[in-house]
Image (cartoon, rainbow, N blue to C red; front, side, top):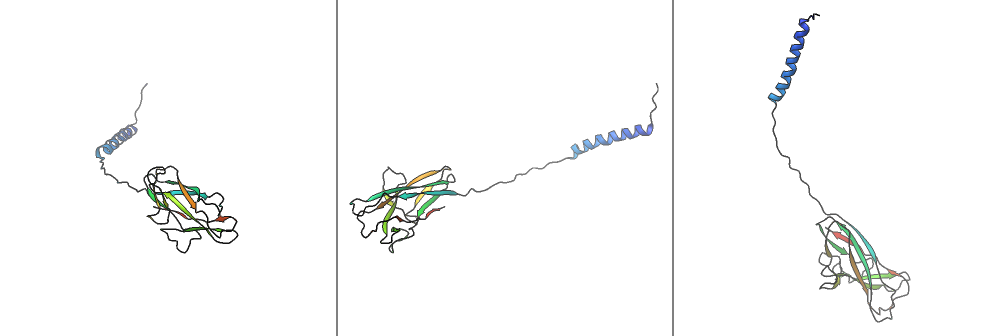
Length: 184
């Protein structure tokens, strides 16, 4: 059997093979690269979430000769490594002598009458049970409490005191509301 080649088809096949091969060679032969670097950066800012459990006192008897104490707590979760200062406001009913540094907080009664003074404290060395003691918790950098976040929810105690034998206190329920502020 004899095969007849068509010269024009054979020429076209050879030229196509040469062109296809040279394209591969020219892409590899003439390709060049350059490299550089791209700086990538950001900053992580501190962020906190807070919640406060009520400071609750037992029933108060104005004829009793001992102060009464109550406890509450503040829970927070802050960015690891970030520090913040927790301050407590003067409350809704501060005495006229009250200041942010030395708050004189008072609860008002649902039956009217004289307000019932109370104090709020923090542990001075930030670690209850270690050397130190309680000090007034105010609304300034100096009278606040400094914390450092670790990324987990932490809880710190709040202590309160009502002095014994407050006079002119009417029977009824007493309350106040104190702002809790994180400054960072």
